[in-house]
Image: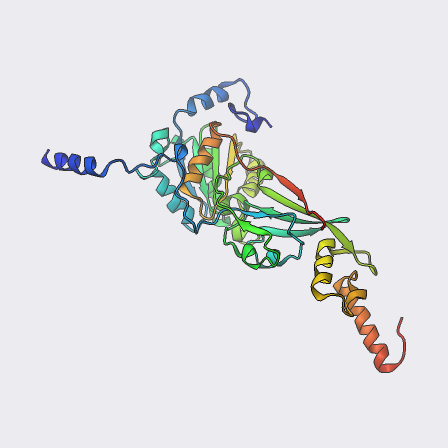
Length: 177
Length: 172
């Protein structure tokens, strides 16, 4: 479970990428990528950037181009229409590429998980990215419909290794009675 | 310059607007709905929540010896309908929203039930706890010989019984 270790990326060991990731912890520049979401999560992302939640106190700053960004805030279930543009935007990011999949749609497809016009969330997009040879260094899934601004801040902290994730896989046996 | 001084006076009066979120509690209202929690002691595996769930975040998987109620938080839209329909009050809505994780598998909750196999075709079709619960609620009755028969086989058996009752010819 190297992805859960407090410092360092999954699959990144002693190299220029790891060095870059260490520097990143002080300030992450984010690019907001809507892949066909309903705008609920987008409004929450906006909320995070306002002085009320003010993520700039953690050094997180919104930039207008994926070429300047370290982290993509991905919202929406990745519709077929946006797929080519999404791949282009992720490809344009410099390494290490980090992605925060925000909202139920980006994590598991939401209510559009099996429709004809969407891919169904980031896990499906990851398969497409592998096929076209675009590597993504770390992904953190942030469920919520829409995600709370606090959940986005928490997700960013988990991504940077500042906090440990709280949820774990639970398999409970129903007690016969 | 005068405008700036006026702003200073306002900001001194109003104070800081920024929330100190990771260092203080979040703004969770009493109506807030977070992830749902399934009580394995109360759940009977009836599947009412599975039928009502709009994004199919809750699913019942029939395996050879067990029936698994799976809850995928990553698809849940936090509508709370499952808690509303649950006849056993096994599902409660919690206030948890800090669900971020790098592992997709962390977002699955499973409740494992023992399966009841159909005594005609041998297919698992319901849970032991549900059969017990139904037995308790209807208090015996003439349904009891068909308790361990799956709906399809039960339909065939009933049709045969009615058919032989009407025509007087036993059908095998």
